[in-house]
Length: 268
Image (cartoon, rainbow, N blue to C red):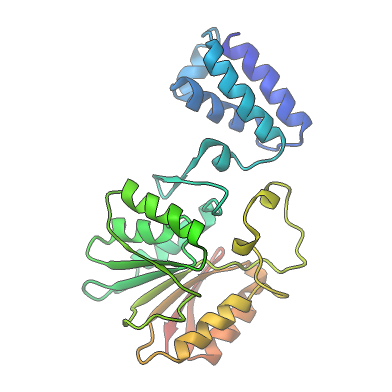
């Protein structure tokens, strides 16, 4: 079978399965299988696909038809221009979260800032922070051992040696922290998530009745520390921003910036 015929059949199958990104997904899977970029693929629709490649593609297409996230099928995704290992133990990092890195890089940071990525999951935020700010001291924190295992793999993948800590948010944190990156579970328990999200770990998605329970806990924990972080960057739904700002304000922080899903709070 050649590229043209496979693409036509595969795209039709995903469209029938209500996959909105059918064409793009098929091109990505084909890129992975035959090791050629999509521009070259599209320029040579007559290229033959080997039997081994067809077998791999058939297996992955069935998984995508079942609405498994593309990142789980591929075992990887891209975040801030870099590749990260992804498994069903962690959420796929969203493009919206890249705004957190952009805001971080605009801050007036101290020399060798201590940054903690709370609820790190794949480690994408904390690892990216370290790669963009090489002098930073970065710790990756998660309550889930399986997620932290993926974060460790990504740390090694990018040639880093970062502290990976199992903790309930900041419960056991003792060292002074300059900046917190917190992309915590924020989806309200009653919120209707899409089919693909049902394949992702619930512990990383839902955050209580209004979705902000873990943020309440985190800010309460910060109150118990001798030294409070100067900056806290959070991610939540835009409709939650007002309530999250109220929580932060009640714990001594002021909202400095809101951008897309991200809010930046500074210590008053």
